[in-house]
Amino acid sequence: MKKRPKIVCRCEGIEEKEVMEWIKRGYRTPEELKRILRIGMGHCQGRTCFSLLVRLISRETKIPPREIKLPKRRSPLKPVPIRILAHFRDEKP
Amino acid sequence: MKSPDVIIIGGGVVGASVGYYLAKEKRKVYILEKEYPTAGSTGKAIGGVRQQFSHNLTIRIMIESVKIFSQLSEELEMDIEWYPGGYLFLAHSEEMKNNYLKAIAIQKSFNLPVSFISPEECQKIVPSLNLENLLGGAFCPTDGHANPFKVTYGYLEGIKREKGKLFSYTEVVKIKKEGRDFSVWTEKGEKFSAPIVINCAGPWAGEVGKLVNLEIPIYPERHEGLVTEEAPSLFDPMIVDYRPDGCYFFQFHSTRHIIGCYTPIPPVLGPDNSSTFQFLTEMPRRMQRLIPKLGEIRILRQWAGSYEMTPDGNPIVSETEIEGFYVVAGMSGHGFMLAPGIGKLFAEMITKGKSSIPLDEFRLNRDFGKKEVMR
Image (cartoon, rainbow over all chains, first blue to last red; front, side, top):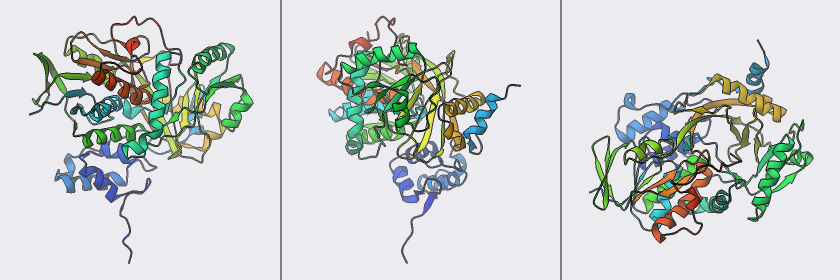
């Protein structure tokens, strides 16, 4: 039975071993790991992976999960097509 | 004992690049970053890299930068996602066309392969480009884009390989010259000392200057950006629309996200980096006007960051009246693209006493009257 990689971020296809490699290099905040690896930058905007990421950081650094700050949330909440957003400006009240 | 050869204040792409080229010259480099690397302006940059400027020195530095970008992945052992997709500056008026033609004459004197092309040629490069009111465009195929995060962290890992150190979450609160060396205190009460301190604090460079009683005319200006989901491959170059309600955007070759921003009129001064609904709706309108086909692509995220502006829109790369204290900041919205070239040249200035391209025009005590046209 072949060992399959453990995926932390499904949208961007980022594996646990990549995350651990950068945590071991001393980058220990979700903000940094997001920027280096694109973790949480995909469609779900971190809804799936950030909790896993926090657990990996906590496991490695022994910092309790509640003390690990999540990256800033950015709007829009869900992906919105360009034409819909553009239409807002064309509607003159 | 915290006594490196050089202390760099600021862990953005400029500090990382300056640090890297000094570390390669066997200087022991410490970078003090008040948050984490790329937390400031670098992390908000969209990643464009161009040589099309109107200022001779900027053009020369950018030619150097592009050379560096094209081999940086191998050098840093990290894929920085460099892609020479070109830059296309659109002209929608005679005035704009003439400005580009003047700039092209200057750029050609440095052997840049830049030319003014017809609307039809623009459409060949950017299929489905809206030709309404278009008179053509200034196109340079050797411009391109790269990933600001990868470049910064790549440089930082390079510094670590050369025995340098990065101190994140380490804000500098006090600097004092004691004899030949500077003592630098952090908010945690730690003390560092070094004969050379380089201010690479981007939009905060003015505040760092105040710590040594220097007046550095750098002020933050808010610029917003956004990024779409991954899209089919649509076009290679950065598209620049300089109309008052224009915008700039390109598609990352590596991840196929479309990323872009615009410059608000009047400029939004100050350090506030909140995102606005106005941008989230106005930017898509401007993008869709240029390429109607973009309508179905979805926006994923918006953000805002600071351009670190100087009065003339050109960087400050300079020694100061305090011997050993230098400023490399005020990149005025071009910090990411300038960083490799400026870092390398500035390191030459420190280690050899002069740089292969003289940087005098970017000294701190210059007349700030002559402005960059291709902002």
